[in-house]
Length: 73
Image (cartoon, rainbow, N blue to C red; front, side, top):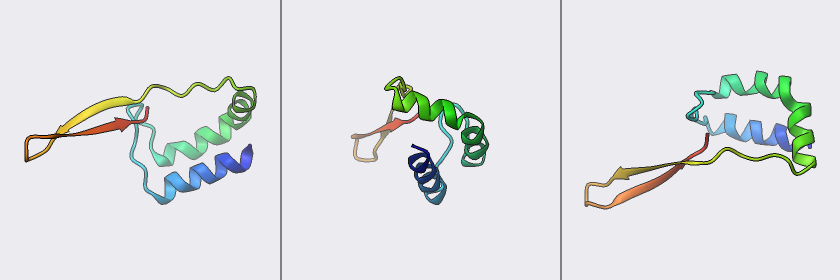
């Protein structure tokens, strides 16, 4: 519902979330949510929301291992 979207936005803003591979920043997010909130809420309620796949990245560690990251898109 609307409260969940508001809470999610505040959490991302508070954590200074980085832009995803779509280059949407925290500053871009609020106008996007304002413009699309009714469609987002409807797709969530109807079970039609499909999140984009996570981009997988491996970062080499100094000890030879890798750190696996999942970057939301």
